[in-house]
Length: 213
Image 1 (cartoon, one colour):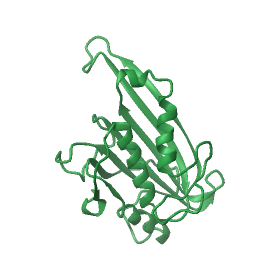
Image 2: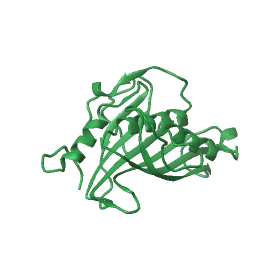
Image 3: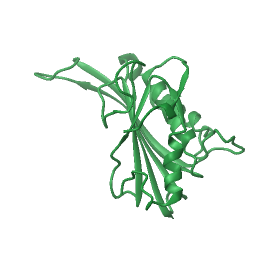
């Protein structure tokens, strides 16, 4: 089941989805609603996130995949009955893919660095799987964090468009959110996308000004 904010959906789920619109992100980050995967949970919602120049295109229209330097998907799963593996009712599933330079792709520490981006953004201490209280209202509360990081090199041959070699970083992760205020989780996810894209520190813009498609 996907969501459109229908009244028939549980209020807790609708509140969680609405809270995503309260997130604050960098102006280089474009966000749009995408079709979530099916059959993973009774209720689901998904966002596509892409790094683009501030003045490039309509921020409400982000494809599921992208040819940009970095993009990601954040999927919200909700099961009112809870799932034992989740240790909760809300599960967030994240995917990030970014083009990286050859020297960075060859660094054996790259996966560890990328995982540190995520764990620090989620306020999860190194070597643990959940955030440590006390947490402020603007910090994500996380349980059961897990995932993988992969650095790959693709070599193109023959009549295939693109550079002879391409180097990519992929991060896949999931975690349980405690409570239904998910704005801090989306903000943390966008921090990681920005880091993967190699963006320098910059200002932020209110996500509420973006009209989701």
